[in-house]
Length: 202
Image: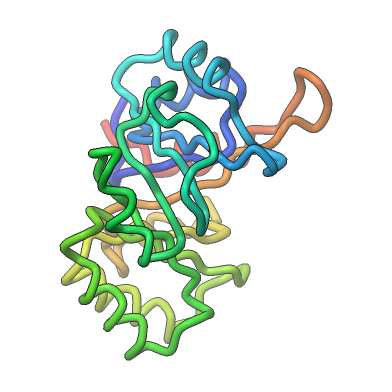
């Protein structure tokens, strides 16, 4: 299987869903490394799932703080943070970095400056839009940034319109939200599956 753009899927803590992602050609799975977070995944569970996968990488999600866990115990290929000031401190782990940015917190000029000042530290930038839908202005802004930077877009995507949006924005990739377990052993992965199938290519 192949997808038309790079894809990262968050909140995958179920082996069945992880194997589905790998089979569909997803590039990264996000591993929440904050022990206080509801979707935290332990090193043991991450290693257990990873042992059944092939061709997919893990991204350790740190938020805005240095990790409290032992990074070396996780099968990580990238680290992701939300604070650009952590870049130099994170160099000790010798892993490429991703910076996640909430678009609503920055004016367009400030956002462009943030990316420009940090392009040497971060391999990718995740632009998170917390609104349900991107406005036309936001679509144009992201499209302009994608011409100069490696951008992953995180939004509440509509599988019917996702391909149309990718045509306009042309990002490096997208970030999809998996689903936490609704109760032990059960979750709902249908929305992610629909989105992945909508961008599947022959």
